[in-house]
Image (cartoon, rainbow over all chains, first blue to last red; front, top):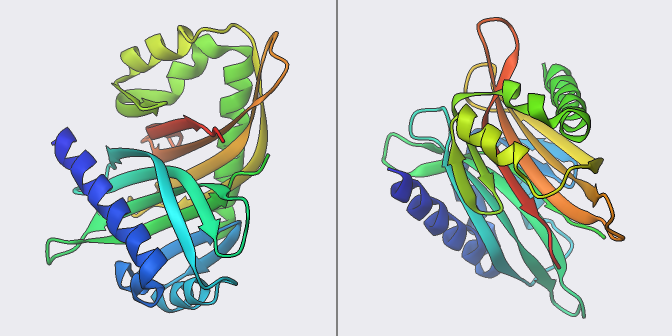
Length: 125
Length: 125
């Protein structure tokens, strides 16, 4: 069970950031109507608003490099909390940015997962 | 509702780090038997094991300074996810450490909250 949680967390993280870096327009497929995103303190709810935010970020190309992944089962049956830290390199920028992000994944009836909670923060200083 | 979530998150964070910095032996009162802690990648479960870890950290005095708090309702009824970033100053150390930490708070029958999930990471970089 615990190993399964780790595997799901790792697979989700790989999939999420690959989509983010290569096909960001498809990221909203991982959210659903009650999903919540806190992006640098801005609160956004619902797949359409989240899609608007993610596709209108002020850069076209970026590359995430993952440093750590911590996954735990949440109290919600089948739910998984995934905590990520890593680096974000923006095209044309010399220095990378450190970030931390957490996802609360909840199972769907189809046997997949959607993002219920998503909190993203850059790590300054 | 949303404002309530923010208030609970802020109050919890203030309480948690004050306890951590001034009365760490009482921190385990915030956990319960199924609580999970991931501390720098080490997975610890249950209030007794978490108590052992927190009270045996290799420093006596520390001071947390909070930079950001993001709170969202989790899908669990009454549950709240709290994401924190800040600085940790250890006694006798010149430089502070950056950290990120998330808590999944679940309501108790007594109208309080306990920590179901706790993930802590230092931010290197």
